[in-house]
Length: 173
Ligand SMILES: N=C(N)NCCC[C@H](NC(=O)[C@@H]1CCC/C1=C/[C@H](COP(=O)(O)O)NC=O)C(N)=O
Image 1 (tube, helix red, strand yellow):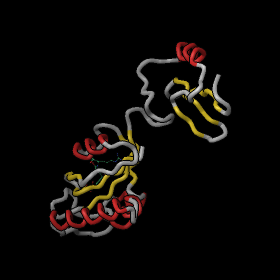
Image 2 (cartoon, helix red, strand yellow):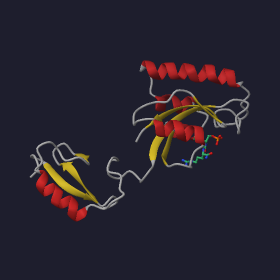
Image 3 (cartoon, helix red, strand yellow):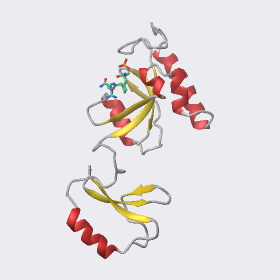
Image 4 (cartoon, helix red, strand yellow):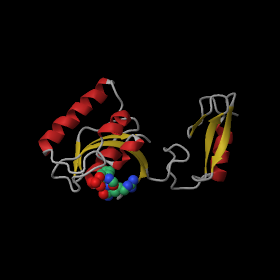
């Protein structure tokens, strides 16, 4: 049996059981402490399908992550233009000074990456606080992908350079 308020539910997308606490409205893959694992083992044998990633929360698309970024472009960017500035002429060094100042402000806790992205990011995702939605391997430029997949949810990268410009990346999921 399960501790009070916990129930086993079934994730159709993963074809796996997960545990839902109806009181706290939390869901998790691992059984809560105090679960009678014999019944659990029986359930898993009956329902488990190999090859699914139990680590992700229910509902996260397979092999994908979600991240937000703040992009500062410069005159060598592949597209030196943005909603903020029709023609971007700052040098890469100037862009680096700008993004390092943004990094300091975020790390000090004065502002979040998303809030700063709203006004400062040279990417069209600025209006969504830099949120790029879910993406998998092969979607983004390699340097960006490598940095984003190396983060844990909630963590922010250091300055990452791509052909687009200089980025700060926060992994959301
Ligand atoms: N799948 C999703 N959500 N969208 C497709 C993204 C395509 C991808 N884009 C990037 O890699 C740059 C770096 C990381 C984010 C990003 C955003 C760029 C940056 O601005 P730009 O250099 O394009 O002017 N703006 C939009 O694409 C690419 N393979 O070129």
